[in-house]
Image (cartoon, rainbow, N blue to C red):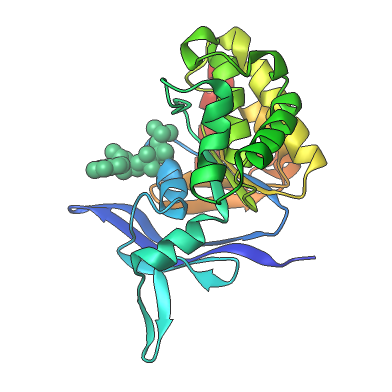
Length: 259
Ligand SMILES: Nc1ncnc2c1ncn2[C@@H]1O[C@H](COP(=O)(O)OP(=O)(O)OP(=O)(O)O)[C@@H](O)[C@H]1O
């Protein structure tokens, strides 16, 4: 079933005279697991930051769940969205950050229960029950009472995943979730993400430099260069028989770096 849950329609993002997203258009269907790959500075993280409403747009329209994200429908068509609309839309999305971004002064448990209590209005007991399930899912039940600094980077990132899931988003965004980790800790985080991808109907959009992982978990891969999609396709096709020279070059250097 191809029901779009994210649509970028000719989206433009600029910083000064630097065009970071250049009339970018793409769609992600409900339940799809999509990875974005591409060279540094090609605009991959910017796409996620726009979806999380951390960055505005300078042109085009972004739709989430059929509703414009950065606009509201007014009597004269689309108008720039107000804070209430952005707040409402934000609830559909969760994000796992490169640097984990946990609250350092809160226990693991509190990191996970804080937003469901404060933002969703769950009772402490409900939030606690939800957190317990999620800690089990990410294999950290024993660590609920610890503080982030008492955990390894891989464990912290798994808390980051549990924290994002605690808000029950329908879309989960991952911004290079393993790139701040020591190599020996990457596997445990990828395992958790892989299991989520297999077992949940969550829509996942993942920016990663882990090409093997992208190949394993994605339904579709988007190759970005200079704020545009140069090529997209199934991982089997894109990684083995890219049609564009730019994709071939990128994969060649990236895969060489990994070997
Ligand atoms: N706040 C900002 N102010 C000015 N320029 C920015 C800002 N944020 C991002 N950029 C620029 O926008 C471009 C795209 O950045 P983005 O982080 O989306 O790239 P990326 O593809 O995710 O790169 P990487 O793989 O290195 O993370 C880069 O050239 C970056 O320098």
